Amino acid sequence: MKIRNIKNLPVFDRESAKVIGRVEKAVVGDDYRLAYLIIEMTEGEPGMVLRKDMDIGEASVTINSRQSIKSYVAGEELSIYQKKLGDTVFDQGGRELGTVSDFIFSRDNMKVWGVEISSGAIKDILQGREEVPLEQVSWRTAESAVLFDEGSNGDDY
Image 1 (cartoon, rainbow, N blue to C red):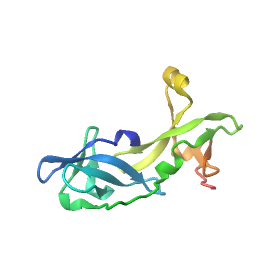
Image 2 (cartoon, helix red, strand yellow):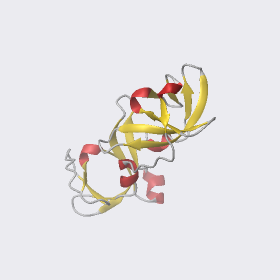
Image 3 (cartoon, helix red, strand yellow):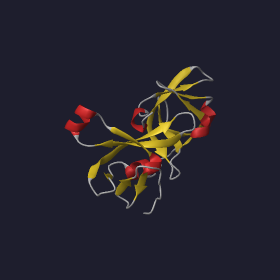
Image 4 (cartoon, one colour):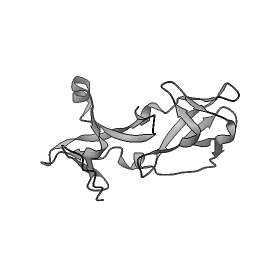
């Protein structure tokens, strides 16, 4: 599942059998695991739900109880997702391949397994966006990465 597809999913409380809000954004930690979701509640202040307290499905996020929603009073964080979105990606020969347009994660272990690369609107429409396993990406600077044929995620920056 792509991180952008989590935004606006309804949040379902299993205990009350009601939709209690929607996902405002996903926060990915420096370990490339989903850390938590920010929830825009239908009633009250925004809250956050840790990854251990939720299940993410194709069409909704389910929590076991409202008690798993933590306070998120004007909180602000910079997740690795926000840092890396838009980074330029090059091949080993220095040819620009495109930019990181999204992270792809597994709902089973809540871990990012790959990145989606956009090569421009026309190429994206004609050929689709490329999905590359995370272990092939080596972040060389804070704004760029190099792709390798085999796994080599040596985060140097």
